[in-house]
Length: 191
Image (cartoon, rainbow, N blue to C red):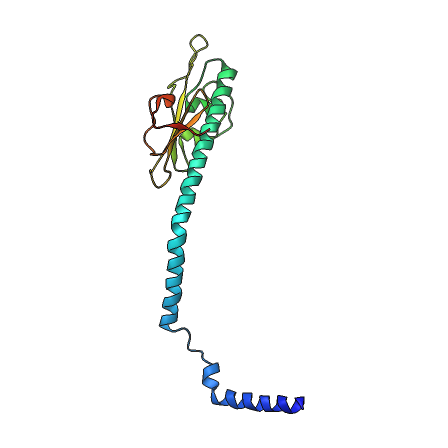
């Protein structure tokens, strides 16, 4: 009985295959409408994903700027305690772009050459105060450092500053750094 049912099913399928051979062997490719639907779906997914990607990149740049300021804070304290001339400018904390680094008061080798150059991850990093090294008799008692987005709204939204207190402050508007970080009205501590 089961054999008979299988034979009948096979006959029906073979007749159907012969009558509709064009239906099963369609090899014309994709129609224009099918391709347009696929392209539309890809564009919708991209429209959803790209703004999130840009926000994630800005957030990563801001985190990198805060990390750079932490590194500079640590380097300033190390520089001051090692050389006894107070705090130093960015060039004195860093290492030369090429060659081996020998630690001196003018090139302390405390931060890498990328950070010494002043641009990192969409931010401009600077130490406006002090402008030069102090001396043992007249050490530099303060320093100011800031990180400003190179393209506000694209590379980062907020700007940051720090001073000898070690407190990193942020301005949500991304405005230029104040003369003194602690006196900046819109700069609020983040740590």
